[in-house]
Every structure is written in structure tokens, then in C-alpha cells.
Length: 45
Image 1: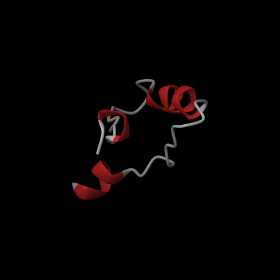
Image 2 (image 1 turned 60 degrees about the vertical axis):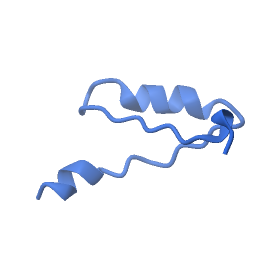
Image 3 (image 1 turned 90 degrees about the horizontal axis):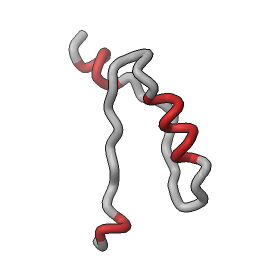
Image 4 (image 1 turned 45 degrees about the horizontal axis):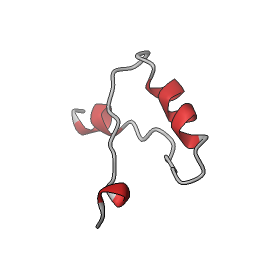
């Protein structure tokens, strides 16, 4: 896997701007970001 193909993980607190960052990154044709998973709150329940 080349450095350009490595996954990038964005983690942040609610209302911290991560959704805006997701929309900005999704505007790039070679970047895909799935919807927010809410994994961490469910993990700690």
C-alpha cells in the first residue's frame, strides 16, 4: 500500500467541525467518506 492509499481516520467530539471537514474532503474526487457511524458512543454503552 502506497502512502497515498493509506486510510485516514477523523475522530472528533460532537459539534467540533468534523461534519464540515467530512463535506470538504468528500468534494475531492478520490476521497470517499461514509456517513458518521457513532461507533464510540455505542461502544461505551
